[in-house]
Structures are given as structure tokens and as C-alpha cells.
Amino acid sequence: MPFFIPFAMGGLVLTALGLGVKRVLEEGEPRTPEEARVRDARARHREALASLKAARLRVRDGVTAWGELQSRAHAEGVVPFRALLERLERWEQAREDDVLEPGAREALRSLPMEPLPRAARRPWPLLGAGMEAPPALVPVLTWLDRGWLDEDAPPVVVDGASLFEAAAPWAATMPGTAPDARVRALDEAASALSQATVFLGALHAKLEARTVRVAGVYGRASAQLAYLDPASFEQGGPEPRERLQRLAELMGELAVLLRAPVLTPEGRLAPELPVEQ
Image 1: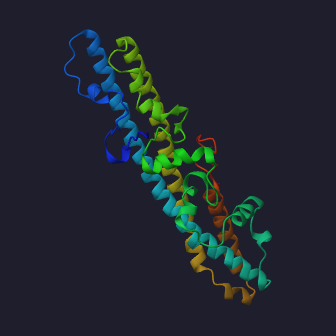
Image 2: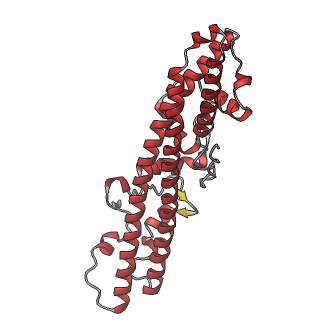
Image 3: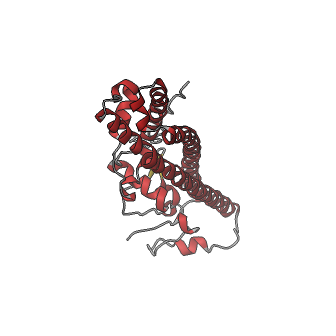
């Protein structure tokens, strides 16, 4: 039977698994020093679980903010720019190969030209625009979005910590188990939760940094795109070509950033791209 931990709902809810969970949660004041140690270990575990919940919610908000900007920059920046280049090439006024560096050209060409449904874009904020989620990473992405852990589903592993086992170590901590073993199991589980929380903190910081960086590049690129009139190329002057070159540099940087992953397919933090000088 599934066993769900709805972090998004704000509490710990357990289905009836015959594990005596109710008895554990309803234990009264400790009567011995050993029981006091177990109570304190259980409190540390609850704190670690609450910290993980808060970190997941921050990451979810960061994914939402970055994803919205990523989709807007793609639909309102990259797609019109590629259409502009195609139009100028048909008019024999400019060539893509002349205004774009190879890396930027490859990034632009790899992005879809048509807007995609939200479901298709769901992996983009963490894995890069145009990418699909590898099967091994789907449980983590689903948990980040929904906050549910299911005993019968593929395990959610964050930075090497299996969250279901760490969030619900009840089998090793029930009354009847030696106090030392219960304390050890709870503290090991809390440590695993804390490890995942630290990782999520770093992930959130990376999402915020990417959002700020892309917002700056996209703002400058949007201004250049709005200012450039394709008809001005018919006059044969140098100014439109200079503006196109500046726009291409910005759009190329934007495309590379949109494609750059925040997480690797293995679920690790991806290295950050160097800042253009």
C-alpha cells in the first residue's frame, strides 16, 4: 500500500501500514533517560523534515520564476529573432553564419521555433530549454513539483539521499527496538534529510542567479530586437548591420543560457557558464 508524505500540504500523513505509527506519535513524557534521548532524536528528525519541506518549496518557487522567464525569452525573443534572420537571408541582406558564433548558432538552431505546451516545457527550467527529462530524474522532478513521496514509486534521491527512507524511518525506530538503535536510526535519517536540504539550498541559489542573469541579457536583447527594422537593410547603410551584429551577440548568449542545464541528467548541479566579457 502506498505511503505518502505530502510536504506541500504542510504535515506528515501516514496511511495505515500496521507499523504502530500512532503509538509512536502519541507517546507521552519520557520515563527514563533512554526514552528522553529517543524523544530528542525524534524532535531533531522533525526539524530536519520541516527544513527539507521549506527548501523544496523555495526551489519550486525558483523553478516557476525561472521557467516563466525562460519560456517568455524563448517565445518573444529567440523565435522572432530566428524569423528575422530567415527573412533577411531570403532577401540576401544577411547570413546567419556571418553574425553568429558557432556555439550560439548551434544553441539557436536546437531550440524549437514553435511554442510548446506547458507539459513539454516542464523539464526546461532544470534541464535546459528543448530538453526532455531522463527517466532516472523524473521522480526528483515530480517530487520538487508536488512534494509527495510514495513507497511503491521509484525512489526520490537527492544528492545521494533517498528521501522516503530518510523521511519515514519508522521501521527502525518503533518501541521495542533498543533505544540506542532508535536514536542512531533517527539521527542518520535526519542527517540524510539535512544533506538533501543543503543541496536544495544550492539549487535554489543557482536558479535565482540564472534568472537574474538571463533577465539582464533578455532585456537588452528585447530592446535591440524592437529597434531593428528589417526594411532599413534595403538602404544599404552600415548602421542596420551593426545593430544586427549587436543583437545577434545578445541573442546568441541568450540562447546558450536558455539551453544550459541547472541540473545534470544524474541530478547533480551543473557547472555555471562563464560570464561574457
